[in-house]
Image (tube, rainbow, N blue to C red):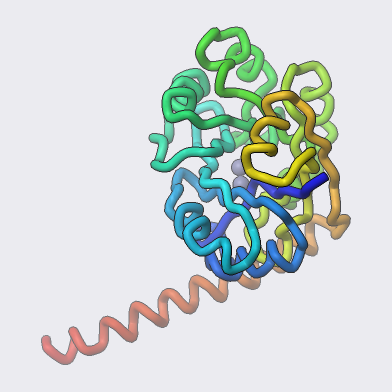
Length: 242
Ligand SMILES: [Zn+2]
Ligand SMILES: [Zn+2]
């Protein structure tokens, strides 16, 4: 069995704190075989990581966490961005056209970014949309979502979708906090396992959500401060010219 973490954010996400290289280093440390980088509505981080992934001995799937107007959807095996703000069904039809597959992120949670069970059922009843929808997160270790994982598991138990566990890491140390096990070793094996619903989810990290949140907040504020500092440094010579 091999190990994958299929929901990871880098600094290509507004709320991410780990660079692409820090992400790959952390994934290698966690002894993962495959990761998917899934920045918010942005595939560039994943493409950049995939291009240098062999240096770290990690296989990278290009993906994104797409903001549909019904909540967040993890999309894997895409090469370009998918527009945000479409319905879940229209997003899934686009994923299918691009040759990708989709996993419902943190489903049925009482937050606006979460796709409801009702929306999932509607999508699964749609002949084209359902061809792209193959997985559902039963375990998401982001501190905003992990308190509601039981709701996801309950929703997933009634659905014909592969069960996925993900870190939803926004800090490097969280990578590998939720793992999806699959038979085989390649990215292609993983895709097949998801499509056959043959994956096994595992929650690895048991840290308290509040502790994780404060770790993230510290790194997020540091990133913001560094950005402001970097902008000032660039701005100074221009002000001299004034
Ligand atoms: Zn999300
Ligand atoms: Zn996420």
